[in-house]
Amino acid sequence: MVNATASLNLEIRISQEAQRLGFVACGFASADEDPVRADRLEQWLGEGHHGSMEWMETRLDHRRSPQALWPVARSVIALGMSYAPALDPLALEANPDRARISVYAQGKDYHDVVKKRLKALARWLCAEEPGAEVKVFVDTAPVMEKPLGEAAGIGWQGKHTNLVSRDHGSWLFLGAIYTTLDLTPAEPHRDQCGTCHACLDACPTDAFPAPYKIDARRCISYLTIEHKGAIAEEFREALGNRIYGCDDCLAVCPWNKFANEAHAMREFLPRAELVAPRLSELLSLDDTGFRALFAGSPIKRIGRDRFVRNCLYAAGNSGDARLIEKVKGLTSDPDPAVADAARWALARL
Image 1 (cartoon, helix red, strand yellow):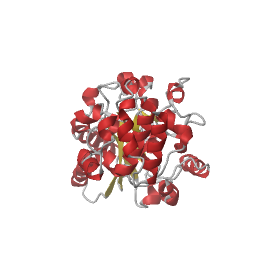
Image 2 (cartoon, one colour):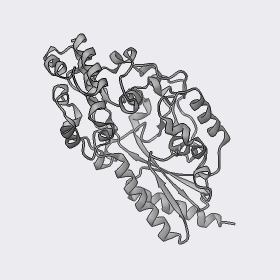
Image 3 (cartoon, helix red, strand yellow):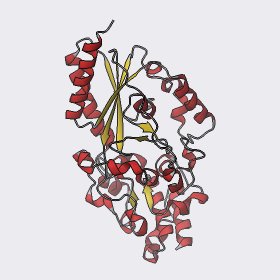
Image 4 (cartoon, helix red, strand yellow):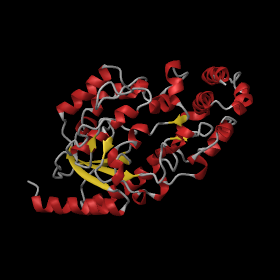
C-alpha cells in the first residue's frame, strides 16, 4: 500500500520540476482503461471521421488505454506547454497575398522541444524514485493525450475537441509520461464550455457534425497537412489563404483571454519569415528551397509538393493577378496534385 503522504509529496515535487522545465500544466491520471473514452474513440473511427489517418485505426487497441500500450503502466503524468501567441492568429485573413501558417508551426518543431523536456523530467523522476519505469510520448504514439489531459485535471476537451485550460486557453502542446509508479489521480476537469459555440461557428468548412465531435475529412488542418493528393473542390475556396493548419476554432475561444504569451517557451516564438510570408515567394520553392526554409519546423514533414499545392489554392483565392505567371509555371509540375491546383488557381485568377 502506497503511503498517501509520500505519494502526495512526490506529486508536488513532480509538478514543481515540470514547472522548472517549462511545463505550465501538470496533472495525474490512472493508466487503467476508461470504457467511455474507449467507446467514443471506436465510434469516431467507425464513422470514418479519421479520414485517411489509417494509423489511428490500425493501432486502436493500443489507443484504448495506457495499459493497452504498456501493460505495466500504473499512472499517467499529463503535461502541457504553452505556445500562446502574441499576435492575433486571424489577422492575416484580410491580407490574401500573404499566407497563413498555424501558430503552432511558426517556431521550432514542438515534437523536439516537448520531448526533450519530457525526457529530462523522466530522468529526474527515475533518479528520485529508483526502480520506477517510464515512457514518454509526444503526439507520435497511440496515446490519447487530450482525454488523458482532461482525466488528469489540466483542462477539458472543448466543443472543438481540443483541450482547453482555464489559465492558458487553447494554446497548449500536450505530452504524457507513463510510469509504473502509483500516483494519486486528480479529479477530471469539469467541462466549462457552457452554452458557448463560438468555435463551431468559426469553422470555415463545417467540420463539426456536433459539439465535441470533429470530422477530420472536412477540417482544414487535416486537409492541408494529412491529406495527400488533390483537395476536393468543395473545400478549396474555404481554405482562403491558410496553407498549413488552421487556428480559427482555437483563436475564437473566450478562455484565451487568460492566456499569456509570456508563458510560451522561447522556442515557440515565431520565425519572422513565417509570420506573414508572401505567396509569391512560397510558390517559387523547389524541394531544396523548401527543405532549407523549413529545417527544424514541423512543416517539413508534409514535403514540398503538398506545401506548394496548398499555396496554389491560396493563390487561387487571392484575386492577385500578379501571381498568374508563377501559377502558370506550375501547371506542368511533375506532381499531379500540384499541377491540378495550379490549373484551378489559374482559372480563378
